[in-house]
Length: 308
Image 1 (cartoon, one colour):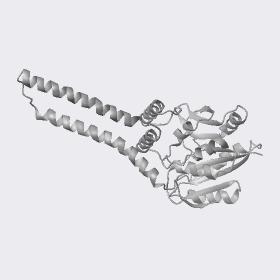
Image 2 (cartoon, helix red, strand yellow; image 1 turned 90 degrees about the horizontal axis):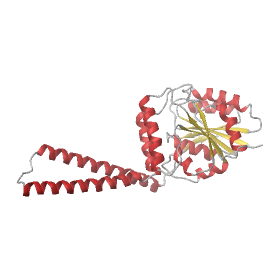
Image 3 (cartoon, rainbow, N blue to C red; image 1 turned 90 degrees about the vertical axis):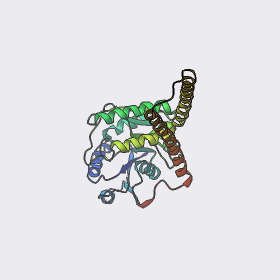
Image 4 (cartoon, rainbow, N blue to C red; image 1 turned 135 degrees about the horizontal axis):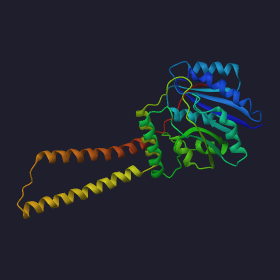
């Protein structure tokens, strides 16, 4: 019998985890043709998430867990879970039940009967999300699809049902700065997208705010595209040309028409503007240098404190 590993990254999911386990058990009981295992990854939670994992492992031999020494982030937790998974198929799910367990049979069918290597999910709406957050999320996907040579579908979730060959390809990418949504698209493989309506968390509070999502999007852009560097170069050349034309106009006006250059406020504004532009472009270059610096250090993606 083939085996399926359910990888569940968790951060402060003390309330949601028992509900997730209960609902998922109902679904996998309807799939006797597959052997299942749970791989819960505790990403340095500050509540009793780790204890809940241990309690579940005591009463169910299918349950395994990995406890990080501190918070390393969801990307590291997903990577660790896939590395610990032993199944022929690997599923990544969130513990808050925003990823519907009842989709598992359809995802399995897509992979085993329809010839796909992966069945991925995408939200068809963003009900319950702030309007501004939804707007910027859609813009992010549009920009990424134009900047990077990867397939990123609007509304895509990390909820995926993957064959072992795809999981092994993902694990072969041992980069420290991980952006899984981009990695999923970069490795390729045939993927079927399964749409579903957005769901609210079953318990607890989201760990993502606007600033953290904005930072995450910047990391994705830097990880899978060099377009920002090209933009910085183009902007620099453009303003060099504008400055050259402006100097020519001022010289001609002063020599031919005898019109002196006046107005220090406008000069101060121009200096401030160009200084800000230089800092912006330097910041783009600095982001790439920082990522390279972290990769060269060769630090582990995560550190395991305990596992079963």
